[in-house]
Image 1 (cartoon, rainbow, N blue to C red):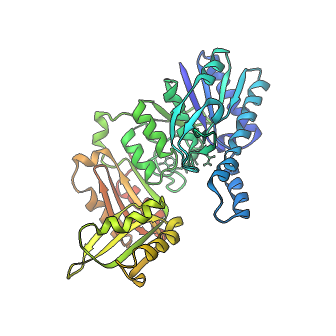
Image 2 (tube, rainbow, N blue to C red):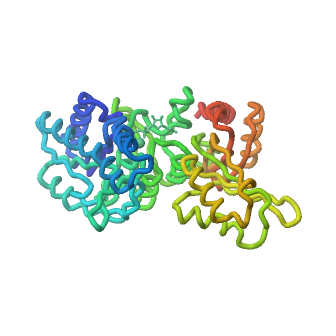
Image 3 (cartoon, rainbow, N blue to C red):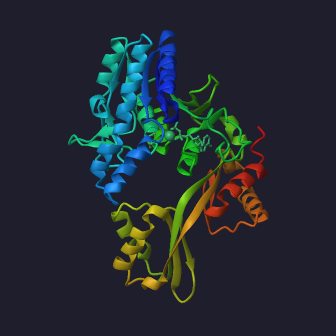
Length: 405
Ligand code: ADP
Ligand code: ASP
Ligand code: MG
């Protein structure tokens, strides 16, 4: 088999752990497999690097930020390759531009466009383990880019897709994908198999165990993803196409996002096209808005509310005041941060009634007020005060009895 193994920051967090990674990939190679390893920066390193940049500039140039942030992975691949040599194996490190992982030029959140895997195949043909830097790529002008936080997952699955690998193993610090973040909900249960669709929702709604784009790649190219721990040999969680049996589970996971904010434009005219006028300047500035709610007030006036990342709030308000002042006086543009979006996800929701009702009842019992609601076929999300996010996640996990199979 051709196996791609991706090791996250904790799994390469010390020299001893790097030796452990080296032994694991050599063990797979000894079983007769071809092995490609994708590694993240050592835990804490990417934050440290971004912190250095912030000391020089509050809003650093993103091209330079990527030059800096990508070095964490450069150190890890070198160390992992050395550790494999030290164990008597053959290995070669490869950076994003050496592979080449070609991306667009959206620094700090680049998208992979193409992977030319020749350098990896050559290394494999030489009997080497290819040790590839996660998180980084190169644009068509030769600039170094990075794929957004948690982007090594995407590097792993994208390389697996390009090589038509049999599996992409994501090694992390938990045993697999759980019904909720096991660090928040102690009795969360490991899920044996989960559909790409559910995993997409969980990843986009706060379960950082996989970066959302890695799941998109897995789904698009049919790469089986196996999420497991680098500290034991337990079977982890398989992310796979939906299976019939999955429909019988109404809710398969609970998640929460942090650092959400909302903006309400009070009493704007309900004329056609008003929503586009409000959101256009934000889109042009690359600000992603999420839950959107419009409520009719009276006399042709509506309140228009949407959520966005708290980190974009000041910039967004400023844009609206300057560019949409004719639609809504500045004192009627109200903002609030410190919000969280809690969600329940499950493909079984498509065929079961009463899930939203149950969610609202559980939150009501905890006296948690719901500010905004959004649904899709397989998820229900409620925006609440972030103070109560963990309480809400635990209550929903208990209320839907997710600790029981
Ligand atoms: P890595 O450094 O290996 O990429 P991450 O920290 O990015 O690891 O992701 C693993 C973490 O994801 C876990 O430690 C856990 O706290 C968190 N997590 C959040 N939701 C879930 C979930 N539903 N199942 C498993 N882990 C989750
Ligand atoms: N090192 C990068 C980060 O911390 C990428 C990753 O770990 O996946 O976001
Ligand atoms: Mg991660």
